[in-house]
Length: 261
View 1 (cartoon, rainbow, N blue to C red):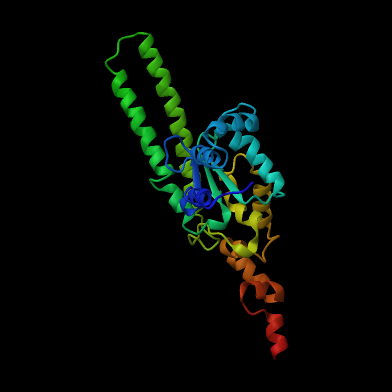
View 2 (cartoon, rainbow, N blue to C red):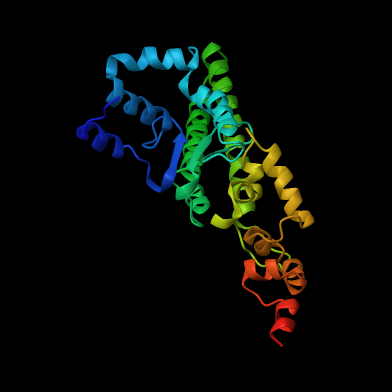
């Protein structure tokens, strides 16, 4: 349908900074709220709830986004998704990345206080506050309820910390020379090869990215810049006898040099 200039401007105002949205109630870039606001602008406030109920089958929007919608998105883009779903191991915390706006700084941004780092700090504070409240409580139904709340929060905190550890492993990844090279997107490598080093952060869809990472380890894609980042010496050896690899990586091969002579 027709979108007015005012609607278009209002929709543009919902665009998330740095191409990152999060499933985290209360966060300014919470994807559920952004979707609801966008729908309200397009169809009117009164139609949002019935529209979402029909689309999700009555399930919570956050649950539908990370399960049904993401699977559909991966299929629609033939396993080359333009939206990437990074999650904690138990999928309790989710970050959506728009791949065309991802930079070498994006993963570091996710580690910071605006996203995962801040969420971890909040969870730790919540656990500490509950423990302090629990300490003077006598044995009672209220105490047992508080203990269950602490157990739940501690489980969430463990999941968040595992995500932080996995994310740190990617950002501090070393190459075969022992140099820290981390991760950065390489436009010419394609979506799947770019996703491969992130496969531990993709519990909702890790099979193909993991298989691609294993293929990179074997040397199947040594034409790629990603392979050069992690296995530079192996790739450089191949460049000496493979002119197409040498051209891709901007180095001179023995074959090219011999032709010049």
